[in-house]
Image (cartoon, rainbow, N blue to C red; front, side):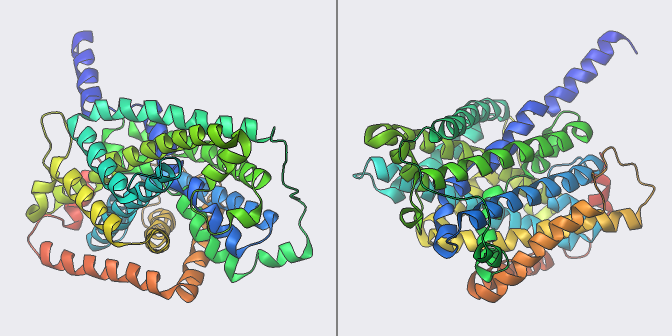
Length: 456
């Protein structure tokens, strides 16, 4: 083969896989640093009155995200096809389980978080421009960003990289200048006896829902594995670099929020970033920083809108009756999948409350993330000799830590918040019914077909 031929093949591979390692890591960071860190602290403070316990939530959230990223790195390197849990669970368990995870990802994993991010953007924009209608802002930004990602995959990547760079700069400025505030709060990181009791309380377990939601996105590059250059190498790296970086940022910025704003003022509030910005920069400076937070939320929305349709697209390729959703335009964007996701997100924005959607999302996503991590054990037992370009560091301790953290949260949430938990289970049940209707015997989506595509 000539050098020219090799160059042509390499160029063709890059054209089919336009997402570099840098862009993949940026997508992870952009998905993670989103509405959770700027909106959920108020709910935690309302039920836990200990700064030590609140910060421990964020440390545990980082541990869970990093362990999950390492496990997904092993699965993604073996099965470098877009779809995330849909691809993994279809191969490890059964196509029906994979379909359910894809259905849940489409509704609870992307459309619902897009609605949450849009609601949060409306709250923050309303804080600095009270005359604006928050719902109109939320719906408008979903429509605009969906149109952006309908244009071109590469353009979407460049747009994403630009906004995420600004988001990272915002976090760094918050952390750096937060330590210079003139009237800091007196918070102690040394645990008291009551603090230790808080760590084992139902309130702590429920608060993990908010934290794990804030950390959600640590697996986001796995959903676009089919578009990442050399995914067997770059996918695991993008996952654990993104998770490690964001974990450090989250612990520091939540310390700054507690350091600059009294806990009583934070309790129950969504726009905690706006409160901290006013405390650090004053009224006018706070409004400016809140505007930058709005840009950060736009970055999160953009990342979710870019990644989510790839799950729908991958599922639709396997199910003949849904194949129209996999159709791409001339520039590679899955048109109908993006439109469907936007429609569901707008519906949730118009009909649901922020806290209810957040709890529902946390419970539902934790179920399938736990199944995927459990799949690391299952696949090693079923296929011990299978090629593994990347192996989970610290196995079997790493996946066990993840399962203990997420499993405990699922149990506590079902006991303490039964309504959103039942709604999550109903979403799963509706997906099972849909699978029975769409994937009857003889239709595409058999175990063999899914497995064959996953290893290409």
